[in-house]
Length: 356
Image (cartoon, helix red, strand yellow):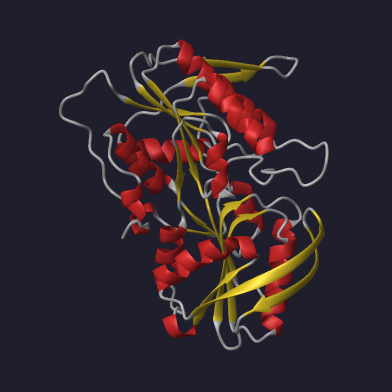
């Protein structure tokens, strides 16, 4: 849909692209071929798509996404994409205008539209992959929703999926005989943390909020040279409800960097911060790739005195949340996506981006 970046003034801190780990200037090739890069955007995060197109030095493909009176989507791609290398950028997340299921339907219909328009290759860039937390059966007669979403995308005819920090790496196995690239956010977090005036390798620990995130915490700790890793063990009574917590590791006198993939209602995060503060932590900073921040998350974060700052990416649009929460810092993933698109288009390795 043709639109414009939100005009809301942001109160929280935003990091400029030039300071990011993956930033690189791209110029238009001297010889234009028919095998062009095309960036197609849904409505879930139009500003991110605009930034990606600008850094790639290509024009954003024009689309017209409307709704009929009964709520059905009416999608049309206005530019010719025959024989082009098409990248659909659409996080399956809600914003002030689009709910999560509409964003998913937009993605499926955009893939189908490009398939019928004779695009040479279709890559779905889904920074936030919805339903990723429903990756297994936890009780009888419930769906494995993440698997269903993967099958829907594959049935539409997408050639490749690119996502950022999947909730569980094994989700890639739900896509049968199709390449899935899981990009990592830890280099951006590491670059940001090491630029802070309070950063001291000897006095910084990385905290995993659960046992499943230890590997993620270990990678970030190695990157910044942190003193050690601390794990929080939780006992849950239901989805989003935590009965008890306890830590494994010493945090007294240390700056704690809590790293996770998703922050939703922030209830668990705020409880973890209170626990770490009671155990003697000096400063608490949280880093989460996907800031869903469902109400009352912003209110909880603002009222949590133990938490100094929360750092998220713009994989999900943060315009409204930035106004509501002064502790929120937004890092852009546009340079990371640009480098991934560039490497895929020119058949280069993606794993090399994270090897150093």
